Amino acid sequence: SSGGSFGEEVDYTITGIDAGAGIMSQSEQAIEDYGLSNWNLQSSSGAAMTSALGDAIENEEPIIVTGWTPHWKFAEYDLKYLEDPEGSFGDGDDIHTVVRQGLEEDMPGAYQFLDQFQWEAENMEEIMVEIQDGTEPAEAAATWVDENEDMVSEWTDGVEEVDGEAIELVYVAWDSEIASTNVVGEVLTDLGYDVTLTQLEAGPMFAAVADGEADGMVAGWFPNTHASQMEEYGDDYEDLGANLEGAITGLVVPEYMDIDSIEDLEA
Ligand code: PBE
Image 1: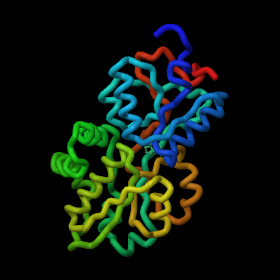
Image 2: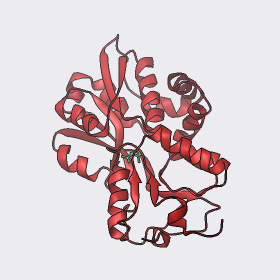
Image 3: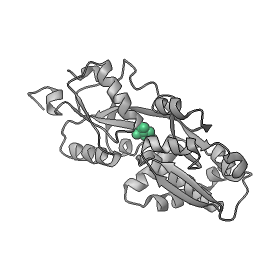
Image 4: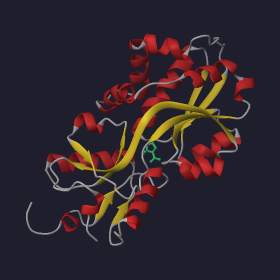
């Protein structure tokens, strides 16, 4: 493209996701750290963000989005993270499993499985791609579980089955967490649990586990993305550690865009 600056071309807008996401606070921090006070971080949803990204790429138009890994968009499109020399996005996270206090005593089997649940970004991305291709999340999860018996049997090693005990997991409708939560729900179902997956906003998701209203979740991006939720709720839930290592958040643009760093965004 020629003429106007990159900022003008995108109307000084970063296409974001839901307002409660950690990546939105990190992006606000970046706007502050890089002196981009005339830029606007537009909140929407994960689905609206990826749809805007797809439309822009189809027309080779400029766009800048809040992006994260693991995510199917890197399999689908040629994208790059903008360098972040100020470190507004931190240097990556592990995704943690978090449960309510007392779960170990009340549901030792579910607790043991959740503690043993651990996979890699590429595993999560396989199921994310299936869901993006149109398969219902529960069905994609069931197929993934069937096709990955070896890994699943490590997660369930030594775990006793139950007969219809009710368990509730909470999650936010981020593509990554839709995938992981459905896989964990499927394994719990196979173990005999009566599973409810409840979709919430980010704050209520953490609050539900901290209050003991929900049994657990697999969506804690620690220590950076969910730093403020860790601070607020960390004393009231039990952190079972990483279920996936090497998650990333940042600002993402299509490869064809002629910028490499957040520093290249001009105020
Ligand atoms: N995410 C995906 C979330 C955590 C998981 C990066 C969009 C967030 O920003 O809070």
